[in-house]
Image (cartoon, rainbow over all chains, first blue to last red; front, side):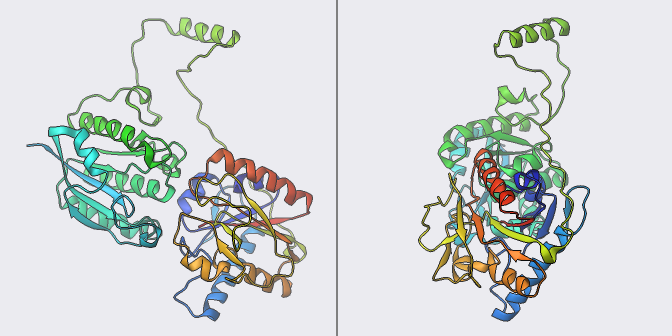
Length: 76
Length: 348
């Protein structure tokens, strides 16, 4: 799906936990996520902490979209 | 003395449980578990499954480096002659686990390894060059035909017999070129192929071209504070009740849902339709998969121009590549028409 969106001309960032799969699929901008069942959250944290974690991941994803890349790039 | 086989299984085939047990850490059971029974039957008297290592797919993929070491030492302690993993069919995380463990064991212990997967399993693309992967169907219904192929490959590798072509043995092409003698000259074979092609008849190339489907990255977003950003997910977040009845696995459709005016996804209105991960966390807070709450805040703070009024969702769980490609083409066309300038796609 990432690839088709990219092909249509829209920059796309893939936020996912299993980075090797994303690399295989062909995503160009990749942001590693927290865990498979909660990629943008962490139930072990308090509600506030979790929200700020999610916001920082969203910001990281937006940063990736603002960054020029030549090929597949993982934004650690 | 029969050859010693260690078998690797995930939590499901290891009979521990479903997605709620995907976090299970690796452990060993002496002897045969689950599909090991059919495997032992196909191996016959020459090889014996001495132990089965079981690990949750979630644990493995989220802790790959640690899990590989843990599992390697468990396998090593049984001094096996071969490792057989899976088959994983079209289960993505299981396929990656089988491939990664096989490669680790092959590299570190220097023994042969065999696994089995459906050709679209992401584990195939990553590991097919390193290991023998028997070609299986996409679901466990194909167990009966997968096991004999894996067992036959295993026995040949154990006995040091030569492995024939992928087609003859039933494994996925590894990109290995082998010199062979043919009855007919290359020139004649090439002309025969050409004639067959011109006549619209089937022909088989002797050197298939690799399929590199890579897309060049688009230039970055210039001014995020003015950009319209859309959310797309393969994590199956849908309005409560799953109005479009998106399937929990092998999804045949996607959904487009309005989030205009929605500040935060609440568990009374949204849930996950995904059957490939433990839904507890997503159902109690759907923003953990589709970060609407965070994006709304960033919209208010002016970090992004606007969060697109619609999000798109499907279930990425054994979904065929052809289907995913088809949905994404339609989705992308709509996003372009709606003036969306950037997409965040989340996957579980």
